[in-house]
Amino acid sequence: MGPSGSGKSTLMHILGGLDTPTSGTYVLDGQSVEKLADDELADIRNRKIGFIFQAYNLLPRTTALKNVALPMMYAGIPKEERIEKAKKYLTMVGLSNRMQHTSNQLSGGQQQRVAIARSLAVNPSILLADEPTGNIASVQAEEIMEIFQQLNNDGHTIVMITHEPDIAEHAKRIIYLKDGKIIKDSGDHKQRRVK
Image 1 (tube, rainbow, N blue to C red):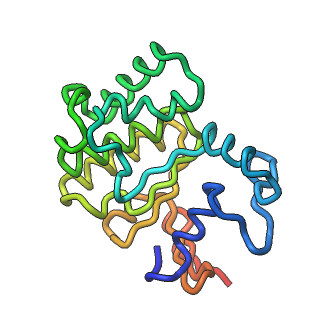
Image 2 (cartoon, rainbow, N blue to C red):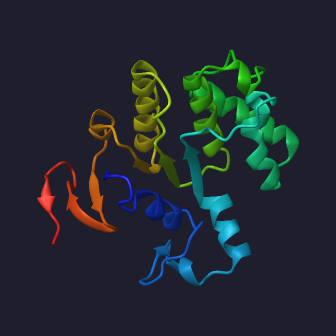
């Protein structure tokens, strides 16, 4: 959490391997990420990191099933396996009855669920969510947070940017940024001050 310009998106881009830090070291699974070539970064993103965006980034005239299967195609997963996994993830987010609907036929909350299912396609260990509840109604936001809670319980690490304190309260840890620096780290809501 933090005000606009505090560094939240920059941090998210560094964690996702989309940007490299100007200084310091970023180690992911024992590997220094900032020293990797572009193709190596792409490989890490494809295997270890799932992205969930506020704008969903779905293909508009493509079914939910195909939107979810797409990253698996790039990962070289055979078609039958892609379809089965896409069905599994769509069912997991409560969209078993909407698989053949195109994204422009779905509500905002349903589109965000498709985006979550798509982020799970290659079974990443880390999910990066940038304002995932920003464009949906509060009831739908609570449903999305329930999905995130289940994913976290299943072993996924979720790093989420939000401006909404009620959404942040779902987290086990809240880190506050200002001017590119951590100003407070709740670490299991203990509200300890970082120096």
